[in-house]
Length: 336
Image (tube, rainbow, N blue to C red):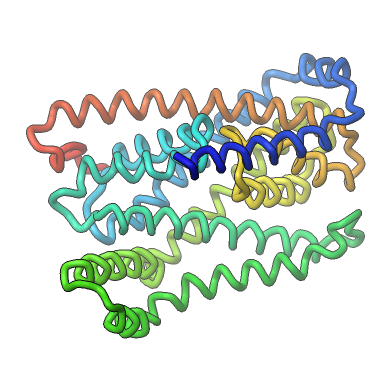
């Protein structure tokens, strides 16, 4: 209870400060004029491209899950869309727990899909996304003839962050003997030692999923497709607003939003997203009004997109689960 209160105090404080900095001096009439004139065709296309990104992430997560159990595309899509929806409406990234519980409810009791393993695959996803975004942004910055504003100093730290993330994924499974040795030295009862040992093995197994060359290759391709689709979505929304969006700007903006979502925030990352949009777009000549107009339309579209697919996913998930005689038999159909 105390932790929850402290988290909310911190999240609301961060949101208030960032909103004040981001919204100070903007023209709300200008924001409304910009958004109200948005062209519907690019927005509709952006909706389709963003949906493709969600499907690519579904296939990508399923690659990791299937190293421990046979999980259908339907189950994975239902869980991931619902989890993303939870992150938009609930604090502290609670959506990650929701999608873990959905997969475990359907498969975990009679398979190798333990809660720890599923959560570790989610961590692998997030860490890999951070590495991919930072690498893409680093390449983008290095290719720019002129890097405006604070981007002039950003490429080197970005490369350092990407390298650190890569080393975590690559080296932690190799250190399993070290972890076992440390566990053996802990002054704990036998039953607790067994639980700690099992938990450690499950986490390392989750990280080790990316050490399979075929899985890694497919994972990298799907990660690239997902983030390219997300960048295209950014460009399409900007074009709908009549703003000069490019893929370079889109990659940098997505990097900022992705890294910014790691800080304590209110549901939907209110305040954080506004601050990132203004900070990233201003050096490229976007006014505060343009940046706020864009990010508000982006967030509305994000809520509509994820809510729609999550509602469909939950409906399918409940239907399949209720029709199965045993929990592990849900989603029994195998997808091609």
